[in-house]
Length: 292
Length: 292
Image (cartoon, rainbow over all chains, first blue to last red; front, side, top):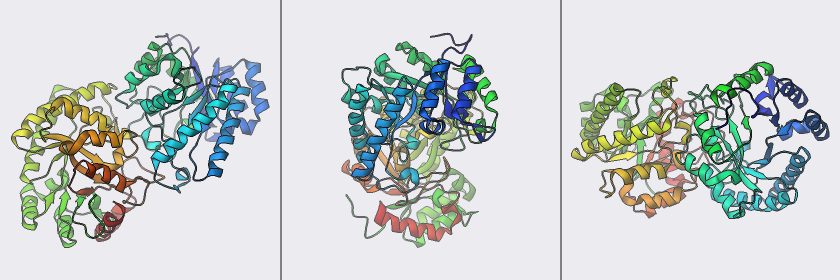
């Protein structure tokens, strides 16, 4: 296992972590400048943040500072209630691939979607098997496009509590089944993003990380699970503040040869988003050394 | 599949569903009387409710009215931080078996526990594998006692969002692995409680229900998953108000020969617990006919 205790060479900041500073929206260029000042070498930005700042502008900033992108958040949301919706998702995902390429991201992270309309509180149906079929078909189609752009796609299994509204791929095993079906040759074009928050509970986690192997392990995300957790989406904990044994999980991932970044992704309406982003970044650096 | 549309012969009320009426605690004897008035033939009471009303009193009420118990809630909570805690859990679980026997319950439901102390916000450690070992050992020991009392034990896999604080058995597959290890002969002494809320998201659900078979399917619980869900514990939906395809799941269970009750278990601080219990029971009856 790599020694994280001495520096933060392998720390990446998912920019949602400092989406707000002191409760106020923090623009992506400010996030980038702050990361650079802290000696952080990689980020993973969200599409809405990039769009707000302008893709060309962000691309230039990233190149100027020599920043790496451990991933780009996010494509996916494949299921739809009708053909027009499916086509809109396809087109939007192609744009996401293009943006990820422009930013030279290591991969495009896929949050695959759940029941169409559920995220808006109006689920169109209850057929999660249908959504799963649409997800598989959507990834298959996008994969052709992404291969041409040489942009790896990373399926992110989301915690089962998001099955209805955000992602109907909910275990690493399920994600790898899709990978094996669509990319049996393990070409590197399709893999998974392992986010500790989503998968820590899984009794088959170690086994499935071994199954994934280096070829499929495209990203590793960290934060922590708090007890109690007061909100399904935006109460993630800072590494070390919860119950996830992150060093153990990183050990499992690195045992497969994963040598990429540990990307910190914390959504925290009540706590971290209320603090100054400088403090949040300092804490990420400190915890990266001691708790990851 | 049994026809539920004409009556509520196979409806059971988990008494947590009407734990409060109009926001005020409703004692178990009142719940029982209300169920009897509605022609409900089965309940599944909680230990704290039974303790408050007195075991002998509840036992007499149940017998007088000819009520069946589709289950008894609940044993479990096996993991502990020290030997004294493990022994306390063992002793308490034996009392739960005794109470279930006195009430002639169909099974004792096991919510197995997670990381010791996590439910109180003070997790003693992060080693969920250790908790899982303690759970297995605890069930093994209790099984000997329960067999003598002829009280079947039903392991209830809980939704992964409860892995830290309530139950570290989180999929039907995992529960069945424990059953197969401890009761390879499928004697009927050990099985599972399939609660739709906890397992609906699982891509392996149909396969694992088939694996369970009639011998392991000891209980079937229903409610619904709301979008959005505003609380991790107490925002369960009434059948038909959410995204779970309950008739499909009941079909899978009954295809294995399950012929027991559909037990309604709804925790709902903001909605159903605020309503008069008569209305809640009437709604359960109506939805049992149309949405289960």
